[in-house]
Length: 607
Ligand code: F6R
Image 1 (cartoon, protein in one colour):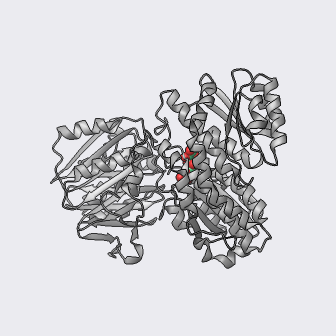
Image 2: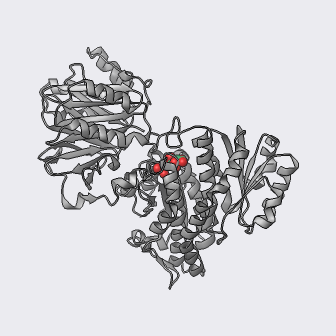
Image 3: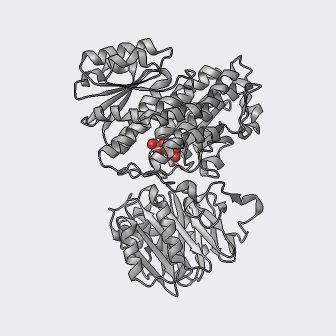
């Protein structure tokens, strides 16, 4: 999704902006542009990949120590240079970069056109430049002009404004689309995603919704004249640039799959008391008494985070005995959810910026629920909007298809389930669960070490255009997640189904050309899943089994991928790993770049 970077200080802005854009590439984009202040505004934009912009930037003079830049992912208007940001007013003296959506842009545009404004793009964003222009022409200072403009706007924005007439100044504003300011020595960086600025500084301050500020090399002043750099707002980013680079691997997706033993260990660090058999979740302690009173949990999330929530439902109901519902965040607020003060709404989100999940949290807050976050990005919107929460500690996830964040979500959800059981003084075997969790890093490593096994399955999938993923109970959400991974990176049409539902419809699809991936660890569901395998075989469909029991399965299937055995509640954390690898290998087999799936963006900040 769109990315923003800005700079004001003493260094040349262009190299910093171009570097920032290259870090933001992973979010997905179709065009890019920069604008540098040097007595006038030099704006350079290009359709397509950053190399196209780089070629143009080299040809133009773009000296200056203050500037803005943007990667665009088309929402309004086709991906062409004229729709790329920065967008300018009629005079070319004001330029803006904008993430988000201006919902009332059509009426604003009609009004502006009627009063003589000339538009150069089809975007919703361009209205902002023209509205600011009108106010500046009336002699209103830039900061107030932006403020008054935003009063007319309905929608979401992360906005940075630059003007040729206000040297060394950027105006920033936020509503529902993240912006972070990096604090240097007499210089400031602005980004929609902190990974774009951590090369330069780790001291950051996040803008809150509704805030508008002027950023100069002297500091950051909110529209009321208050400095934003108060100690309690400054945060330190605790990850490194190396963590966002590929570290010698061909793709971020592979790097992140291979990191998972460490990621699980990091998610568990300091949170497991193996002697007492307790989980220690400091982020929930502040509202411990309120949490002890809850009678229901609703988990909200999108995509993989939603599937993690479905595993969470089994975990929390089984371990803590609290009723759980899981809702797609994108549907949650459209259906009058029945929520009381004793309902906890838990949002799961890697980025912490997914617009639908954030909206679900706002809805839960309006209904006075307790709101909780399971979020990876520290200081992100969902982390800040929720009453309490637990961070994944998975490190930055760059690959568009979620892998390590998903696994860390399952790890933390297990800790949360044990924590709730403790609060309710449920009789559980916390020791066994926590000891099982502690063994997972070594078990995941074992799967990764044997990853050649996956190639047998790749050979079966190679000729398939469609396939089915099947699992029961804890393995059902893993079947959905496996199918999602396959769709995202290999573009093979994959359907995730609960095994029990197969005979109610999808079995009609099975033929020699239609393989199935069946999750059949040796657990309480094994016998039942085995009958599904027999049904598939009887119809000639190829079967790839993910199992803990080679001896029982191997002879009956076409490829058998063996994973270590753990407790049934923890098995999903192991069974998803081969499915991630299978999707990755299929992308390579089809000559696709798994890090840049078509049409997808890493962080979905529009509804
Ligand atoms: C799938 C994937 C997406 C995200 C979803 C939610 O591989 O990455 O389905 O899981 O867009 O994103 P977050 O977790 O950032 O809210």
